[in-house]
Length: 205
Image (tube, rainbow, N blue to C red):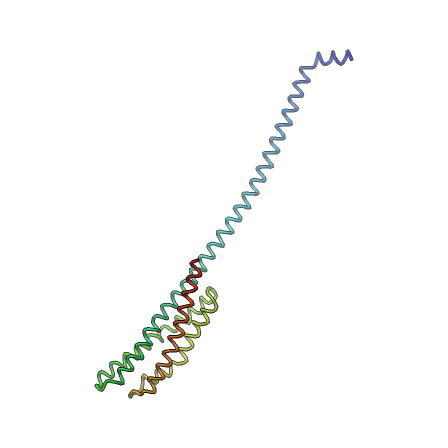
């Protein structure tokens, strides 16, 4: 016991310093390890967060591109509809005037205007068919289907209208046929326009 006391008296300060050094080293190592682990966790977390941000950015950009194409398609359809509506109404009106006028020059004037009005519709058919093919996957299937039906309806009845407009004489029966065809076009245009308007409202919410 006396020897232990002598040793402590002799080496006590040294032992205390050694213990303090060991404790300090333990805290230093703990701090280094903790800092390293935290840095690794933080780095991994930052990478994951950045990955999610990049993924969201890509999805947002993709959505905006798809939406832009979809809206462009609807805009093109509405332009096509506006020409069809105005032109087919003018076709019928000019043809009706052609039948009620006796002067040959006036008759030819209204007849030519009817032909020109219908040509305005036919000229847009190729571009409208192209739009339907290109943008079909970017839009509501219902819209592209009705758009396609409108194009087909015009094409299916184009020959008959051209024959009527090419006749030298005006016939009331022909006028009735043209009115019926015109009404079919206008109904499809109205339906298509309404659905596009509803789609615009849906996209804006």
